Amino acid sequence: MTKLLTFSIFWVVQASAVLIFFVPFAWGLVLLWAVSHFLRAIGLTLAYHRYFAHRAFQMNRVARFAWTLIGTAAMQKGPLWWAGHHVNHHRYSDRDGDPHSPMVSGFYYAHIGWFLNDARHERLAATNPVMRDFSKAPEIVLLDQYFAVPPLILAAVMYLVGGMPWLIWGFCLPTMTLSHATFAINTVNHLWGSRRFDTIDQSRNNAFTAFFAVGEGWHNNHHRYQRAARNGFYWWEFDPTWYVIRLMAAVGLAWDLQRVPGRIYREAAAVKARRAVAPSIVSILDAEIYQGVDLADEAEPV
Image (tube, rainbow, N blue to C red):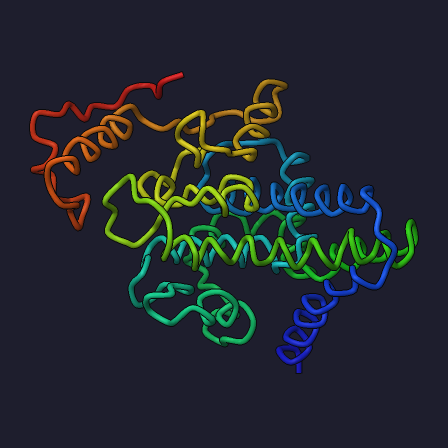
């Protein structure tokens, strides 16, 4: 019954996005969509992904709760569930055990099916690093258990403030666009885009998904060096989540930001040089391509 209810609510919200054609249009409503989409996207990427799943930086408990609450309002289940499954994705990327690989299970299942109705992904093992390290924080466990409450509150507030136009443009439409922006990282970014690094999976960089998923579309970068607080490794790679993390660090709300080591940048240069004269390698473990390249760590370039 619970699974059927979850399935039904998900698709009702998805379908409700078409109601934008049945309410009066105003440019202010487009701005409302953008704020609701991108603010909750940063909550997901900053808290769920880079903090809980990858420990890419540290933040105080109040900031952690605030961003986790914003992320939970995205209607993509709880922070421990989300981050724990993401850890499994990296552990088994594009192999058996990956919760959402289009290579293993097909596009629909990798995009939506695993999220909605696969019993294998209802719970996480107690040994999962996210469960092990964060399941003792009562406020985070509360959000994980009652993940339906924040989006419900957001929907109610939108309706009470602005009626049906605000409900549709401030909740229904951005919840739909944000869900597919997130899911596209699992599918689009393993099928289409560029590969700066020859990782052992099919991760790819894609500027289009990076825009709507606030920096997560630099997925090949991320799979090569998961610990970094930034996914856009170069200044021209749009990564607003990284900009927010840096701003938090500037005012003392975040610290211990994990940088991209200099060896990763040199590796990117070595791969680019090699590709100019030879076919792409299959695995980053083919270390012979880096003969003569110093891979010692150093600070990332400004």
